[in-house]
Amino acid sequence: MSGCKPKHPAAAPAYLSGLEPPATGQRVEMEGVTYKVAAPHGIDPASMFFVQVDVDKCMSCGECEAHCPTGAIQEMHPDGQRGVVDPAACVNCGQCLANCPFGAIHEEVSYVGELFEKLRDPDTVVVSMPAPAVRYGLGECFGLPTGTYVGGKMHAALRRLGFDLIWDNEWAADVTIMEEGTELLERVKKGDKPLPQFTSCCPGWVKFAETYYPDLNDHLSTCKSPIGMLGSLAKTYGAEQSGIAGKKMYTVSIMPCVAKKFEGLRPEMDASGHRDIDATINTRELAWMIKQAGIDFMSLPEEEPDPALGMSTGAATIFGTSGGVMEAALRLAYEVLSGDTLANPDIKIVRAQEGLKTADIPVPNFGTVKVAVVSGLQNAAKLCDEVRAGKSPYHFIEVMTCPGGCVNGGGQPLEPGMLQSSLFRSTVAKINRRYTQRRVG
Image (cartoon, rainbow, N blue to C red):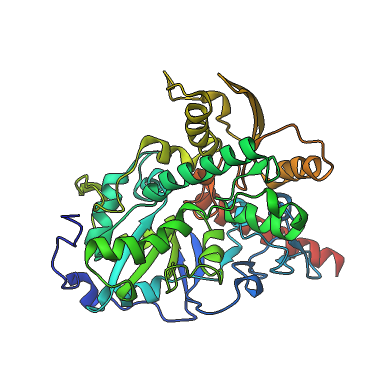
């Protein structure tokens, strides 16, 4: 395919010559969140903490515990400070971090130091793979209203950071639609695999299912997530199309999510013959990198991703919201089962903001397809219990860990006002704690 090779010079951008990447072990604040610079490789992610509580900043309010879907955060210290007790129990969703009013929870993994070094290395081809939801959150870090679409500026910023190939996870989301939709059709038609079929895109949900409902694993779609597909395709099909050896590529997953860092390290993510995903950063880290590079984000032009693995449809874009995966897969299933073309591709009945939504979709020449869309693992657990008991009426269930879907992921910019309120609340809490301690003493 012509036009797949990088169009800009291989020389590293000028900003890199004066930039000192953060060192391993260093703690860096990025968009109001503290990150420990660490780029793990060859380590079992199940043994790692991806978020943890800073006991010196924790004010024992319990907000993190209230938002934890598995009880992984508990009271661990004499004054009531919380902590993540066991990485096995944590699904790495980051909702504790996103909802802590004191900024007391930090990330334990950040590849930004290594990534800057790779961008500087002339022998490494650095590949960007941003998720759909990132382009709806990134603008907040530059003063734009919540939810503003900045996809074109995001691609432009990645080029100016020095990424050699600008590919897009929306491309792989389209592949997921075809794969997951086809698998659902096979289950419905042949009956050789159990129903309902659960989606498998969300890494927090997949870890939750594997840990707490291992007997339901056959209900999970066998499809990799979009980034799981894109990582392996980048170093195989993409390498072939661009004329660049897969072993020279350094693939960077850019996600709205903390749990995607866990997924990228899963040992089975090596289908390309190499590590499919070399690094994962989230929206906050990308914004910080853009600012460190001195890039004027707001003045950037709108640019498209590179071909081969950069094209996508509108179905891919809606993956970032709860109900988006379901809607996209149903479009395919409807047309295959009925033999008819949808007059209106929008199946808005399955779109959900949070919680649980169910729907009966009438399909000509087939009957009714029963579906459920759920965000939040407490809600998902209720559906899992139904499946386990043999009482689930559904054919297809979409699960997103974060309320409302990936757009509200734990790696997105903190809620407006959270950063401003953290210092005030922390100060008041410290005063109250000292006052209480003095009275008790």
